[in-house]
Image 1: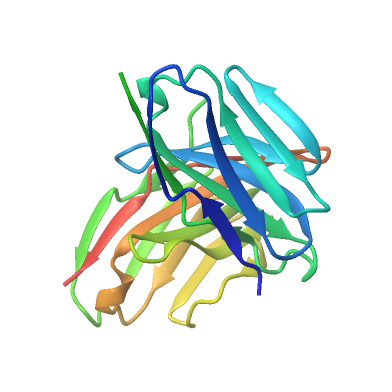
Image 2: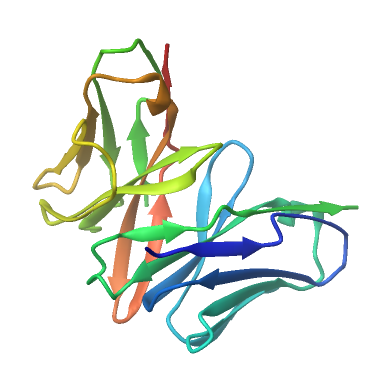
Length: 112
Length: 114
């Protein structure tokens, strides 16, 4: 069974701080997604990774396939970054038959 | 370009009833997937459709079913509703370009079962 663990579950930081959210998974994957969910439910896809590193604005996502681990970093954090960040993986060990498996999310609050 | 549209936005049903939720993907997207989100379980995968064929199915009972039409619009149906089916139901359409897949989520249907 594919398990996806995120840490921390909750994170409160001051504006301007460097933020790191971690995601570990237990099986081989074909892709890992980082999602952002604001209060009210809307989910936005931030990144899809299968290897290496991606950057978009102040967001950076990395993945280490051998260690089955990914990190999402936010530089110069801002109160508008406050949201739930969710990691999701697509396994290839079952031919992708499981669809996406999600972590429980990291609830991030950035205080001004 | 219009986003992913889910209807209705809110729905209240009673136990034992059935419900049909609708999802219209972004124009040109042929893949649609459905998810259930609850405070206790978080996000869980329900189904995935591509070109009218179900590609994947999550670990949900047979009361949960879905389909996709030739115009890529999708519906999901839950029969014999239970209190535990109260949740936010989200659909996403996806665009695959080479090795990259980007998901676009709708705003969801908030289902309350009384």
